[in-house]
Length: 193
Image (cartoon, rainbow, N blue to C red):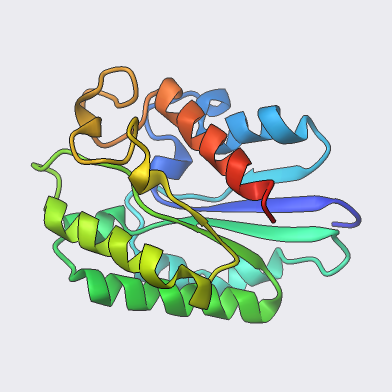
């Protein structure tokens, strides 16, 4: 801990970097682009994670909060697996909102993200779109900033997942170039805080 900026990246495989080497994960690319060692960036995302599993780790996440830091920023990209499993968007959004509000109560600056595009064989597109729309509609009630991956033409809009440039062959997980887009959008959002 101590003076400086701490960024804790939480989420699922679209943050943890499934299929990529560590320097290509979006948090690592973000760290290289913005911090260059001037801040502390940790990627605590876990593949196949659902919102309820992230919420169950709330106390562990809160233990990483350090009031002595200049800033404690929690980056939250979660919900892909919930949507793919068919969980109603309103149910997932309510769980996300509760998780984020609890982190804000601890003192975290919370940045919440909409989820990336994915192949329709992975999950129902209508649920993904509804989940993202609900986040956009009320993010200010549970977060300090919105990172809108879902609106980006390269990685978020319907059909973006078919790009071999930005998505791996499974059309769910970003390539290094897709993670670079995530990093770019994250940088633009963080600088607004």
